[in-house]
Structures are given as C-alpha cells and as structure tokens.
Image (cartoon, helix red, strand yellow):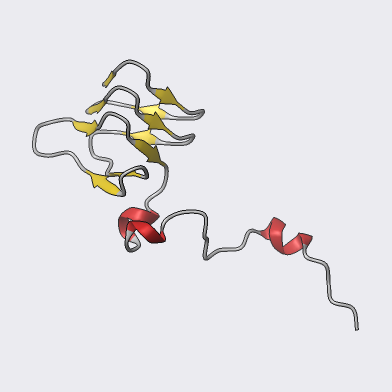
Length: 99
C-alpha cells in the first residue's frame, strides 16, 4: 500500500494491500480499498480496477466514494444524491395528513 502526498483520507477508511493512492486524491468516509476492490471516481465518473499483477491505482485528484451502486447499477450520471430507498427516519418525520 502506498499513499502519496496531500491525500485526504476520510474517517473509517481502510486502505490495504495492493493499492496505490496518488497525490491529491480524496477517499471519502467509509471507503475500503484492497487490490481486488473496483472503485468509482466521482470526479471523473470512471471505474478503476486492478490490472493483472499491477496494484489497484487511484489516480491523482480522484474522489473515491464508498459503495458499489455506480459500479453495478447503471451510468455514472445516475449516481449521486438521488436515492431509490427512503430511510426510516425520513418516513417517521413526515406529518400525517389530517382529514
């Protein structure tokens, strides 16, 4: 594992064997990187994977976010703030309609 200069590593991140993080990259909170983890770069809308015996490389200036929705669930433009799931807290906070 190699982490270059000026990399921002968010809380609760894990960077393990087989990963190189280039300068000025951002690893958002909760990101877990291993050599076999495909990653989504939110800044470029690209997916990166390890190639052969080379380590997984996070390019300079990349913004890596946790999860796999963008990798397995359609185009990168669909990834973002919009969610198909509603949290229980958002449901609980809605006021009931009065007759």
